[in-house]
Image 1 (cartoon, helix red, strand yellow):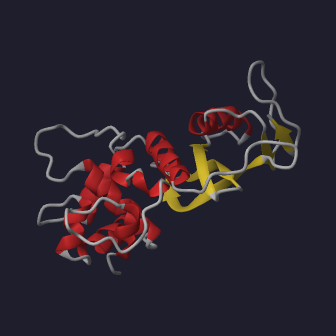
Image 2 (spheres, one colour; image 1 turned 30 degrees about the vertical axis):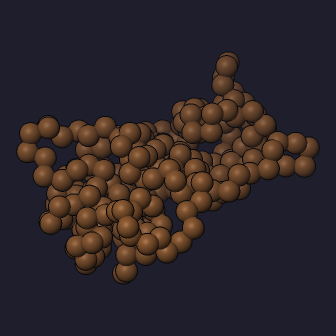
Length: 225
């Protein structure tokens, strides 16, 4: 894997380094800036690697196809020192166990929202609202393959997918001995946080949702908010 991926998601360059691509307005919001909003769960003493560097490396590795902690670590290790420096590492990179211990301690909900906002900042502006255009959010539940809770139960997620941009705006974990219906309202609140408003949004879901006072209501298949 070459450093081309980091050239796209990490647009800041050292002074004097030539720019091989045109940086758009959306690109100017660096991934580093976005990830800086994620709280670091570690004690300040003994931190070997910057949190932003580890997160940026994980994002690049996942975009490149990594789907395990070991694969993330391998992707970073196979890069040259120039890429390490761009990611924020100083001469050494974390092992897979270090990446794993750090990532599992993060607030997954907060990280998901940060990445959703960053992805949206890199997309082209969408048409203004009107009679001929609606933002459509598809809500669906999936079981994560290969991921299990300590008790052995598979992880069941309910996700909100923006069909106009291809971005997963938010996702919530379904509680044990429950179903997708109680998770719908918390999911919509997260989507509202990312979008800023749900006005004019069309929600498409494959499960009935329970109307509640002051929250979005929906029919068994769709809801316009």
